[in-house]
Image 1: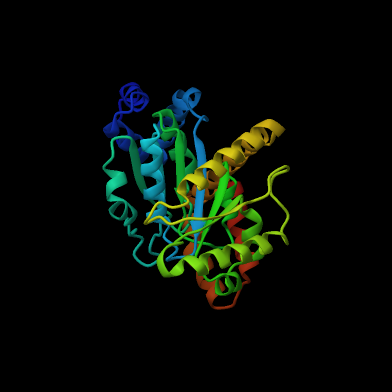
Image 2: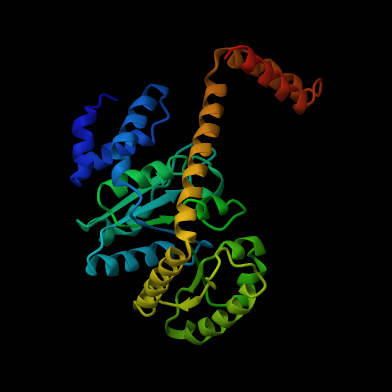
Length: 327
């Protein structure tokens, strides 16, 4: 990719959508030759980052994450905010292609000049968070988007990845708490800064309010993530808009409390350190796979492991030894 970095940086800072798209494509690149460009881009944009309200949103498939995000995004834009959405898209483990359907599901929001919706393939990353989600968030913040919503594929063991990179972690639930609670791990509930029971409308309304009571009871059995904040449970409907104002008020309350007790600044510092180590791990993994000496060893080692002539542990140790010898 041929890039005029100075022009690209100025374009991002001025909010130019074409420049923003190019910058996001650059940070998503797997090419080794793009690394220095990405580092320089991040360095130049860094002074303009860190001010957005970062919201992680997850929930089981069918809970209405995209509909909720679109309804909330439009409401926030009407209040004067600029909204960015990173809709992390599942990548096929067979074809390697991504569905990239989130943008088509949020057509109204995606076409709003004060919104930017970016579907990003997860490439099999645990937790459904793309490798470059943090970098993408920084680029969007530099472009002036003050509310950042990260939609994940769904609830799983690695949702901690999402919670560690956002300011507030919102779990959307469906009416019918009995069935829902059976399929959700206690560890995921412990990550919640807030629960919103979506689809509280029509015939679902009574059931949704009963579900909210059950979620409140379930949260009492967990340890709150932040001192001074008890995760609330809110009922809402993405279709009618009912309860969305309350959801946003709770999000703002969360920030106010965390800022007053120092937890907000602590969380942001922790995010920076986790970002640093995630980059280290990703680079080491990429360097190992790109190492020619490793590439030579892999076919024979895989064959011997499959034939049972050598253990997986021994094969892994051999690869690491070769890597150390050739770096």
